[in-house]
Image 1 (cartoon, one colour):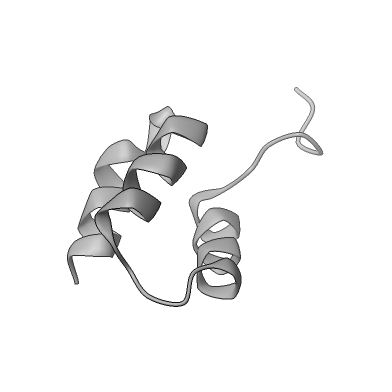
Image 2: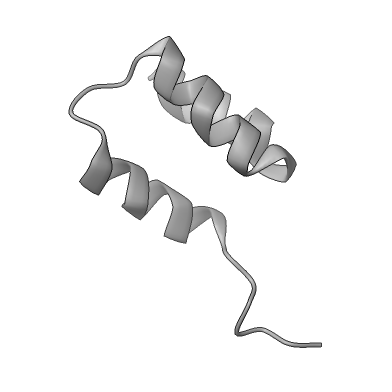
Length: 48
């Protein structure tokens, strides 16, 4: 298994914090589209 290409949820959340000025629905949908395997966690993150 190649772990170099594996993006963790923490990696994604770090990137969101750097790129998004505020949590909004359009950002949520954009990130969910890019990482559909993390949709549930991203929805919880943007909900807080």
